[in-house]
Image (cartoon, rainbow, N blue to C red; front, side, top):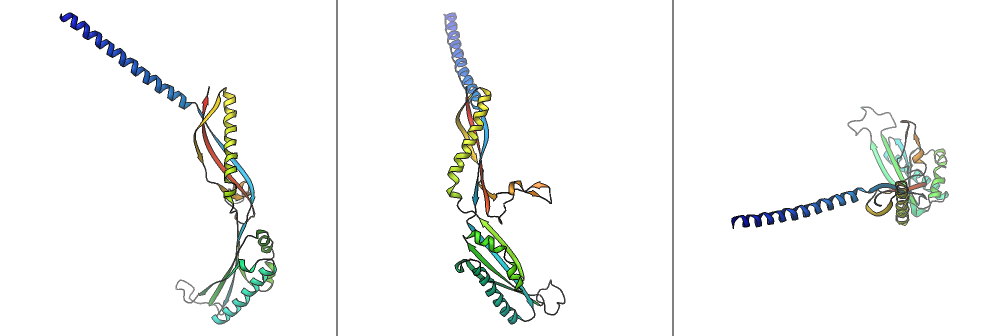
Length: 253
């Protein structure tokens, strides 16, 4: 009787061990299959570029005056401001796009970190900045090259800063992303063709921020460092919009 029970117990134990091995074997093989499937991927980058033109100009024109009489400086500044505004209007800038009158007065004797003595006629410096904000970017571009007319009038121009901006990025985002994605797909397809496999579904995707740069900045050589300068150039009308995407595709055999 005892031997019979021992045989039955051994049989049950063997059965359980066999089932356990079969189940564990399934999970191991399934895990290896998934790992092999997941490793059959290719990661590629795609990009899209588009030439665009700035549609907004922000222009700052600054001048300064030096003297010992505050009232006289303000009077002279008022005349110079009228001359600058007249110059802008004559060159096609709309009056509604001009914001005059950012005045700052510096008393050099009141500055404790300034010089102990100030030359006669140089105690005060009055600076004024006139700002132009307009969508007539071509007019601004042409007018900036005519500032010599102001200098001939005796106006000391200390600031001439133009920031050309492209503000219609939302109008081109979707088609550029489609183009960048197709560019990445083409690269993945070339890899698949060389490897004898097929491109499957997308496993993951990331997108870098859109960049708006001067159209020629990517090829501009920085003379100080002898390196390629990729920094945005705000003083140029012609821009280049660019986006880069990174896609990982499954590869099917």
